[in-house]
Image 1 (cartoon, rainbow, N blue to C red):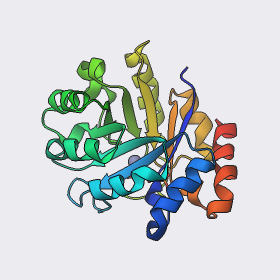
Image 2: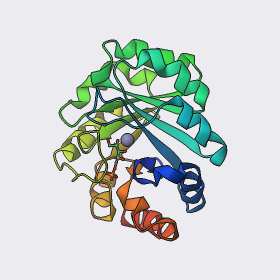
Image 3: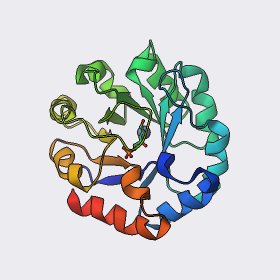
Length: 218
Ligand code: DX5
Ligand code: ZN
C-alpha cells in the first residue's frame, strides 16, 4: 500500500491567522495542506478562492492539495494552478465533461484528482483512471467540517481499491476522519487522510499530538 499521507484541512483553522496556522500545522508534522474551496452553489457554504491560496503559498513548502467544490470548475482551474496548488481535485458531479476537466488540469502541469460525493458510485471514475493521480472519496456530504463519518463509504472504498488495481493512484478520504475512524478507512484502502477538526482541535500546541494520534490509529 502507498505510505500514509496526512492532509490537515485548514477549514477548521483560525481564518484570522491562516498563514500562521498553515506554518504551524506543517511544522507539527502534516504531509500535505488540504485547501477546501467552496462556492455556495455546488455546496451550501462559501470559503475562499485563488487570492487566498496565493497568499498562503509562502507559508510552507508543503504540497497544496486543493479540493474544488465549485461548479463549474473548468473556468477556474488556471487561476488555482497559478496560485500555487500542486493538485487540483474536481468533483465528478460538478463537471459535465470529467475527462476534459482532468485533461485540463494535467495540461496545466498539476496533479489531477477526482472527488465523489457519498451518493456517487465508484464506477463514476472507471473510465478516467488513466487521467487521475488521486480519487477523493467524500466520507461526509461536502460543505462543512465537523460532520459524522458515513459508514456506507467503507464498501465504496473497497470497491474503488479493486477497480484501481495496481495503478499509481492515491485514495483520499475526507470528512469525519479521526482516530476512531482511521483504522477502518485505512483497511478499506485509503492512503491519504484529510482531517479538519481532528487536527485543529485544541489550538497550535495540540497539532503535533493530534497528527500523531491519527497516524498511530491507522
Ligand atoms: C468538507 C471538507 C472537509 C472538511 C473536513 O466539505 O471537504 O475537508 O474540512 O472536516 P472534518 O475533518 O472536521 O470532518
Ligand atoms: Zn476537503
